[in-house]
Length: 72
Image (cartoon, rainbow, N blue to C red; front, top):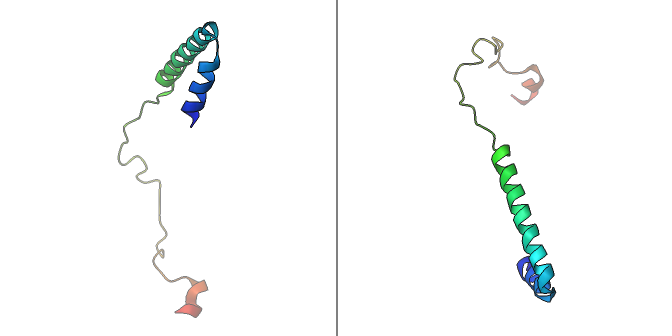
């Protein structure tokens, strides 16, 4: 739908403006290509065990909760 609408409007333009549209498309293509290369983040390799010793669970973690005694 969008492509056909663009082509329809483009066909209605005089030749000089069609050249301007082509230049603008080339400008946008170059600009987008530059941003795409710059914005690609480098993925860091994950390392296992970075949080070892930093996370601790309570001794009574698996014990039933007081709030749920009515349901047991």
